[in-house]
Image 1 (spheres, rainbow, N blue to C red):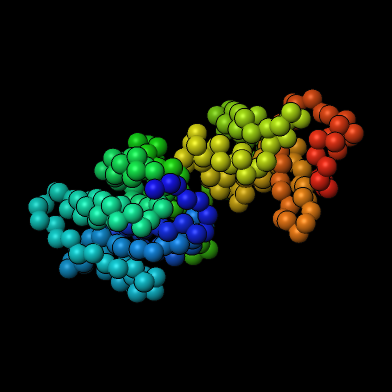
Image 2 (image 1 turned 90 degrees about the vertical axis):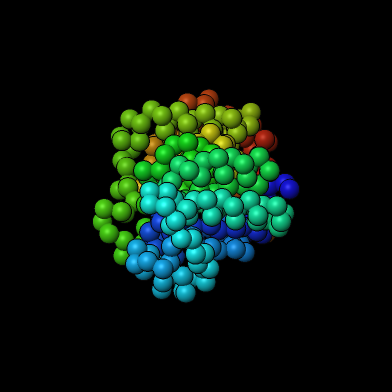
Length: 268
């Protein structure tokens, strides 16, 4: 099955309840909705005990199906095994375009890789402590701290907005942004922001402008002070498109820029 993007994608959402916080599930499912429709929502754990009692109201409110998995042996995580078996069963139905695996546990690294091998998209959700192998095994990884709501405890809230000086001092970030803009750029150095974001995600599955305190990639690029932004209206009732260009790129004259991009342009 080919990978499918957009809100029409059919997604299976599998939650490791032993390794996820129930209070973030509302924001988490709202994030899932950006990538497609959750046709399956299941949470795995031993629901006979008291450890998962905080999940009850959230399961009902979000229509999440609890899957019972007894802890047969102390020290062994039976929940992981149940999730993997269910994921493979769902994969073989060929009804889905992607999977959302919600856990901060590295045990799901191979599962994510196996699903991707079948041509489906894998979205991972976990805390910043999530081991890098699992993060890298996903097409896109979202840190739950970036989804915090106004009621989230202070220690779990997203990062405060980084200043231009702090952003410029992060050479890894700046190189990532510059290389992505360059890779997506046309002859004049302008790159569609959508393409830039796509390239960045391919290089770093856990990249998220919210990690630096900015809601959108365009806001992050602007905040660095190192990129020009251009908003273009294609006409015909189509939505405007944002473009970015590295300020180091030699500027083209107004005539050449207009000839290369006949669409109406307004500076962002």
